[in-house]
Length: 250
Ligand code: NAD
Image (cartoon, rainbow, N blue to C red; front, side, top):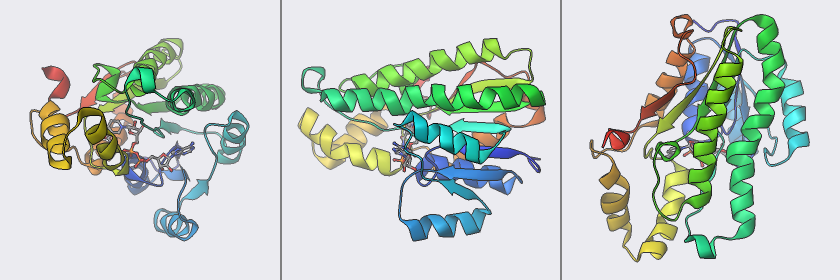
């Protein structure tokens, strides 16, 4: 149902973004991938999905502008690239804090401002932002991440209102813990910040949040993103969709 639609998914060389890109491509969309990684592996992914790739570093607004110009007018924009850092606020490295806000929030502003004119002209568009359960609730030691994701929620609602009569929707998807390199990477820091073993971090910190006691799977997030692109979802805008095993219901 996405044949003829052009999509860009940021941070799609790994994890959730890659699963979203796979799902949109499987539904017929022409996809531009973005993100870092091994050149051969990225070339293989492009072949597999019939996709193109932009290696733009989203911390740099000029690289975002080049990526958006090369991708051309978009029907679907998925802002998914994101990073995490776990530390008590008084020790939080200032440059990491600024980097997380720049990637998780400011880059979303840049891609959106550049995509909106084309979508408005077309009278159709889907903007989907990967936020997080941490856009609705907080856990300690993630001040930059939680601030950025709450920011993405507010930004998305604002855009939804601005675009309400244009045929363009803007929504957040908010996963709980999904087993990806981002989660694996924060386990050692959480062990250090809380003085726990790896097993304790997985069972007592991460899965303790999710009533299902299961990690969310990347293809489940991909399916939700594709669902929001359906014609029938035209009146779903400004929403923040939880996919978190019940975490934020508590
Ligand atoms: P990941 O680390 O597997 O993938 C991150 C992607 O972003 C990669 O493709 C990477 O190359 C790209 N990237 C990183 N820095 C970049 C930069 N400066 N410029 C361009 N691309 C860059 O992460 P993931 O777990 O798949 O997370 C994807 C999104 O989902 C993030 O926004 C994250 O906050 C959110 N999220 C993840 C979880 C989870 O449990 N994994 C939960 C909630 C929300």
